[in-house]
Amino acid sequence: MKKLGIVITDGVGFRNFIMSDFIREATKQFDAITIYSGLPLSAFHTVPQSHIVIKELDVFVEGKLTWFFRKWKEVAHLQKHQSFYGMKDNLVSGYPTTNSVRSLLVKSIYFFTHFIHSDTSILFAEKLQFLSVSNNKITKSYIQLLQEDKPTHVFFTHQRPPYVAPFLYAAQKMKIPVSTFIFSWDNLASKGRMLGAFDYFLVWSHLMKVELLYFYPNVPTEKVKVVGTPQFEPYVMPKYETTAEDFYKKFHLDDNVKTICYSCADVSIGQNDPVVIKAIANAIRNKSITTEVQLIVRTSPAEDDSRFKAVKEEFLEIIWNVPKWILTRENHAENWSQRIPSEEDITNLRSLLENVDLNINMCSTMSLDFMLFDTPVINTVFGNPENGLYNDQRFLMYDHFKKVVDSQSVTIAKNKEELMVQIDAALSNPKERTKQRKAMIDLQISEPLLGTSKRIATTLSHFND
Image (cartoon, rainbow, N blue to C red; front, side):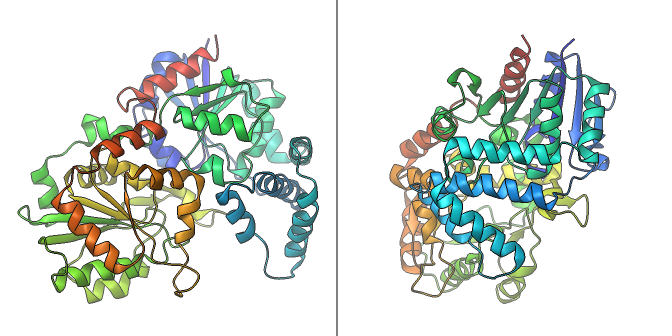
């Protein structure tokens, strides 16, 4: 029998693998499926319980020793690859500014990994990290769980969360083959070390495969499979489809006026969002944009809209789309990870993508979402070290986004004046960059959206052959 274990750690994994066609396709390829969830069971009320077993994992909290070895591994990985701007930026921003006990420990890690950061030393730190959780009671409960279920393959839907390290250790201890999906387009070239050693890797694109083999030279090339990503599959699924008429009615928009959508980042990197939104709203008011337009703002699903209170009160004409993501659990170490999307929100997002005339965002993956519908995209980076705003211009140098800039599939606005010129240009000639947008999509997502879940499920099934 083929028995698949699926580890879902957070709301984005839930969106990608529960709200796509993946579960339906996986049931065709495997005799039994068990979901091991980092979310509470209540999140899965729409999953057909007759076909799937769902088990909520006890929440693992890192001990001090485990934290130390993980931090050592991650910082050493950044030190080794700091020739990549994103790695260097995360290395610099992660350096402590205080002298607490934990900060001093981190500073000591920075010091010795500056000199010692070979692959051998990184793998040694990882071995110590996993050894430190081997006798943890939660790790033992995971081993018992796997002994009872006997999956023939365990699939991790995210390669990084440290709180599932004991589950990976348990699977390895049981000699169960394990695979993972690379979570996002920026993870390999700008983030720290992944969770641990997997047997197989699923990636978005041939580009991502090249990146993975570069950063993890011990991985055999035949163990990396290009499958696309289920992140965008809802955009070709009939259940999330609506009409243009539904869109204008739902958001109280004028169907005779062109629509700009500003999509926000979360507060950690989208600190200039209110500045840009106000600039667009003022330009619409004083007719600095030559075309008649209306503005809809979609906030980040990782947070509520409270930080935009002042903007909402000043510009009552702005339409707001606050994503309907439900917080499933309070008091979690990473609260944002416990938010899951509603079907209504995915439908709303697809409706936005299909019907707006222009998207503006700060270097977000949302650029790809809109490009899939051949919608013009402007990336705003108003902040630099000199002007007092949050320095978002540095993201232009991140390896994954530098490819976007160089491709000319988007335009880059570094101030209000540039933004207004680019808005006029995009609205007057929306197809100008169609060829570049298609090339960028082909680079970042190497397989068609249609059939993504089937492709992933079939690939996982073949790992059992």
